[in-house]
Image (cartoon, rainbow, N blue to C red; front, side):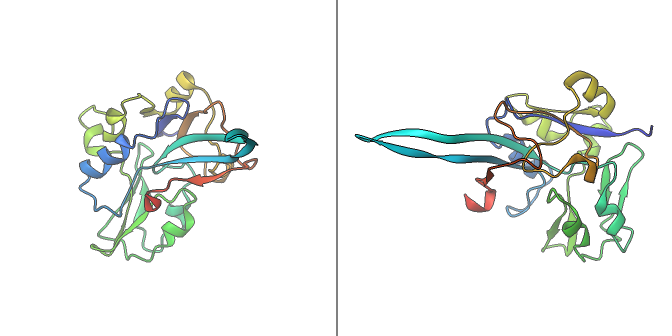
Length: 208
C-alpha cells in the first residue's frame, strides 16, 4: 500500500471554538472569505412548550465537526482537473499547482467536502496543503497544534487507524466508499452515520 497521510478528528472532544480554523487562515495568510479548515455544528430537534414557560427537548442533538481537505485516496478533484493541476504527492497529500490551474472550478464541484476554494484575488483554486512545509520540519499542521481540546491529529493513516479506530465518516459527510477519505474520526455520542442523518448543518461561517 502506498504511503498515505491523513487527519484524525475527535468529534466527541471538539468544542467548536474554531481555533483550528483561525490557525489555518493565519498560517496560510488567507483572506477572510477563504477557509481551508471549517468548523460547524450538525444537529436537529426542537424545544416543545410544556406550559408555565417550561420547554422540553424533542429529538434535540448537536455535535461539532472540523473539516478540511480529506486528501482522499480516490480523489475526484484530481480526476476531473482538465489542466493536470491537481495531484497526489508520494505521501498521499493532494495539492494544487497554481501555475497550471486555470480556475475552471471543476475540482470544487467534484469535491463532496468543499475543500477546493476559488481565490478571486489570484484567479486560481486553493486548498489545504496539510502544511507540508511544517511536515518537512517534523511538525504537525498548524490546525492540529492549535486545537486546545487536542481533538485533531495528523500522521500515517494506518497508524491513525491502529490508534483511534476505523471510523472514517459521519453525517453530514457522504459514504466513505465514494472517495476513501484519509481521515479517522471518533464520533460524538450523538453522531449519526452517513446516509441516516435527520439533522442539518448549522452555524456555517457565512451565517455568523
